[in-house]
Structure formats: C-alpha cells, structure tokens
Length: 282
Image (cartoon, rainbow, N blue to C red; front, top):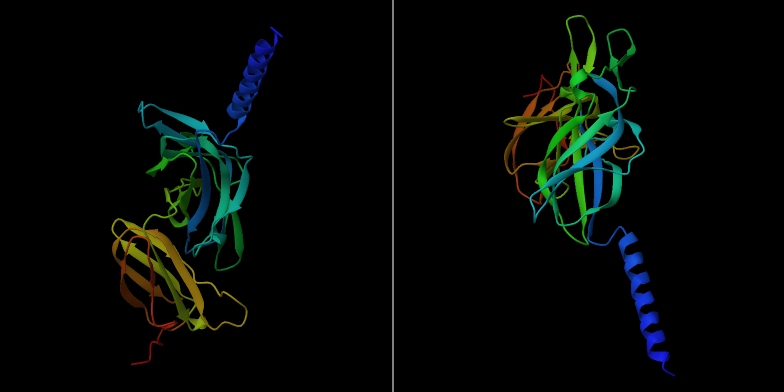
C-alpha cells in the first residue's frame, strides 16, 4: 500500500512528459500559418516569362526582442510562367507554420538557371535565355509591407512580379534577369475590375499612380464571350489613371478614365463592357 502514491505520482509525471513532448513537436504551437502566393503584372512584349525559383526565405522580427532572423521555407523549387498569373490569378508557393509573435518584413527569392522569356517578333516567336547577374546569385530581397504573424491565424502574403520591368538588355544583346517585385498582405489595398469590347480591338490596360505603373491583357472568361475581363489587385488607395490602349493596327481609339480606389473594396468599372470606339467614330 505504501507504493501506491508513488505509482500515481510517477504515472502523472509520465503523462505530463508525453504531453509536453507531443506539444513541442507540433508545428502549430506558438505559430502562425503563412501562405505565400505569386502573381504578375504583365509585359507588352513577352508572350511567356519563366522564372526558376529555387529557394524562398522570409525575414521575421520578434515583436518582443526586436531581433530578426531569416527563415528558409519549405519549398522544393519550381519554374513558373508568371504571365499566366495576371488579372488576379495566383499560384500558392508555400503553406507552412512560422514562429508567431513576429513581423514579416522581407522575402528573399533564390533563382535557378532555367529563367527565360518568349517574345513575339515581326518574323517569329523567339525563346531567349535570361542570365542571373552576380549581385543576385545570393537571392533577390523584396521589402514587404510589414505583416504581423499572429498566433493561430493564417497570413496570406502576395509576391507581385512586374514582368515588364524585370529584364535588362545590354549593348551586347545579352538579356539579364533583374526582377522587380513587391510583396504585400493579400487584403492590402483595393481591386480594380472591368470588361472591354470589342475583342478585335486587341487592347491592353495600364494603370498609373506615381510612382507605380502596372499592365495587363484582358482575358475571355468563357468560350463565346464577346468581351474580355481585366483585374488589378493590391492597389494603393487614391486615384488611378486607367488607360485602355488598343492594338496599333486595330484602328480603335485610346480611352482614359479615373478610378478612385478604396481599401478593401473592388472598383467595378461601368458600363460592362467598356466599348472602345473606332478612330472614325465621332
């Protein structure tokens, strides 16, 4: 009988130890769930733009100690045609737990060797390899809009790669990858959405708010549609110039409007669709 209290104490201690061990191996404990997504601002001259991402890291700053460290994320590497990720489309890169009670301040992308673009020339469609400059061999560091990694929450962060500004051509004709990108919470800013017709105008859409300029090509949402949809995400609050620019040989007029973007809201341009006028129309 004298050993029973000891046995009870030992049993409770073992259960407590096992609970703590399981708790320490659970990645969700004291953590925030980070979902990192990739999208694109289109280019006017590229048909395809492939970016070979090999490694992704985030710089997290502890809110208590104010000390920061780079955390390498669980990403196996992949090549993406980012021009497919326009008009609000995204692809998820990472979905994992990171330390909670931190602030995400920077994202680092390391690139592999399979970066290239496909351009449309007067004669044909031409694939062109893109070289990595020495200063980017250790990776591209993107200053993100700070986002707190709160405990037991899901944090969605978007990397927006601006294809039209991400290639440099030297005097020797070499093509270098110099990615221009921004990173922001998915809930940041406002959205702009609209529809254009006729399809024969072959237009692109450009939005401007100094110092930012973004492009996209409208897309047909479903077969048989006689209009094309365009969308921009992550736009800062305030007035944006919206330019509808038809193809140079289409004989349609340019059109410009002003859109007032508000945080957390979608600015739907009316009418649906905006119908571009021919050059000879009054």
